[in-house]
Image 1 (cartoon, one colour):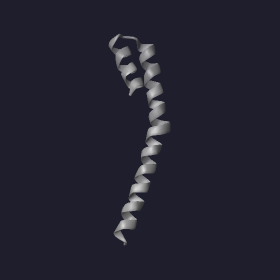
Image 2 (cartoon, one colour):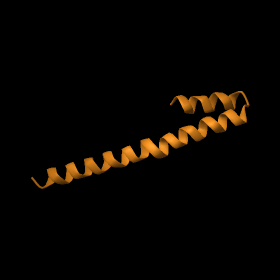
Image 3 (cartoon, one colour):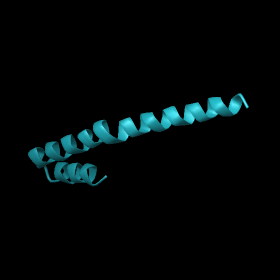
Length: 55
């Protein structure tokens, strides 16, 4: 969240380079950490639901 806020603050100050740097950093966190983690959680939850429905 801090990188997103940095991007917003930089945009508000019309600091394009700083905004893009913070945006790219937040996009990297999203792509490399949050989305894979969410996919794994979804996989685990679906498996648990399937297991529960057959018991």
